[in-house]
Length: 177
Image (cartoon, rainbow, N blue to C red; front, side):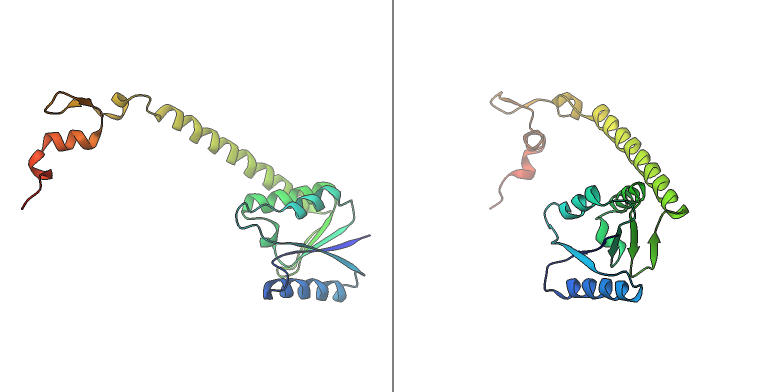
């Protein structure tokens, strides 16, 4: 049985040290043996977690993953539920130190898997509805946006709304001296 501690913070900052200490204390208090740490440096641009993704793919049944809190598993509820669901399917034990949560081979794991599949299905349906609504409302021509072609004093035609406003009320746009 291997024990892994997952931290998600720049090395050397206070958050990293707090996560590291919390995991070490938990391992010591629960006599779990040696812990192997994996640190993920936050990616501000993409929010990706390649180390966590790799760990999920390689962890095996009965191995233990310890995090300081759930927030380190994902950037959204959907991501966190996805990680918890994947770990429960594999049979990995997850301990979140701050909350005292333990994901083991029990009813909690089954409930989390069901919740994740429900959230994913709802999200897919909502995204599908938004996409189809956007396609129905997408204007294809100037006429669809109620912008009528107008001509200026010289007879030039333009569909620019700003030009149309200027032509409809030229005194408003004239310079005053």
